Image (cartoon, rainbow, N blue to C red; front, top):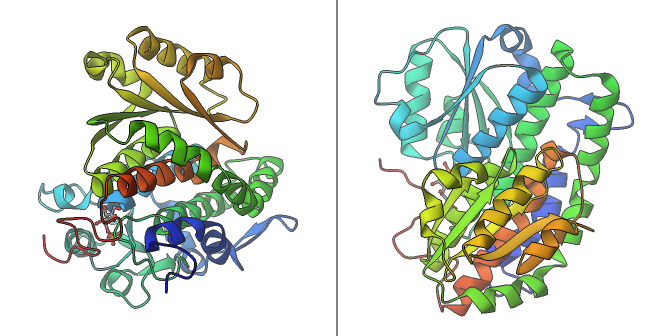
Length: 366
Ligand code: F6R
């Protein structure tokens, strides 16, 4: 049921605060300082000893996996590789019995992801599944795992599944960090408090819908889009570009902002809208200079910035101001305006957002 919403996709974008709350409930408590994922507890000795994590997935779930790489390395100090399941399964990968393989899949039925974990299982790795559909093939094939509690996702373009996957992987990284003692207790508390409050900040971000719709009206006829971000916002750039491509059929690419000068900068002219994810405090000045590079070539700049930002606001054609959070949690906020932008552009182009051409909700053939 779509309720008051015109499309499932929009409804599911708006369900994200609740979907995240449902996925975190009973699994953490900020004031008491604990994190507890049942699936992780069961295998914690083996996970603690793992020398390496491999995350495998496809599409949007692969983007969650990339955020997972940053989180696990940052917080738990474990080397991580993120693999497209379709490539991983066919290239005779090195998998050891002390590796942990995390498979991420909304449907739990993606053929390539399932085959990748079957291969890893044969080689004695521990398989940890993050799925949304209970009892799905990937959930059943995993040794352990955690469900996302996004509820059914009907829109073909994944939205709330992505943000709940990112929430779960954040908990995994935090719980392992706690066991390993890789981050100070005080820092852990701060992150947990922010996580507990992230839904409110997403609600606040959703209030930007009308502003984003106005921006969509200006750029709906563009033929290309570039999405740029650094650090935790780089996978968000990839995901924002994917959302636009799949539902509006506009060609879009996501890039690490600094990689732009190694090629994509050649594309920039007055017809190229460039979406910057510029909320990183740690690399702020570097992003400012990336924005300047685009501006110097007359690209149109749509920048997602922290509330109160002035430096980028001066350079950009449009600024979308989002609430501040811990940088490691920022993808949960910065993805929201990009989902809405893709949605409105697609609607204005007359596209079927819930069932885009050539796409199926679950890809059960390779
Ligand atoms: C994008 C999208 C696809 C899926 C991909 C993996 O919006 O929906 O890219 O993310 O097909 O699907 P799951 O997560 O079901 O394995």
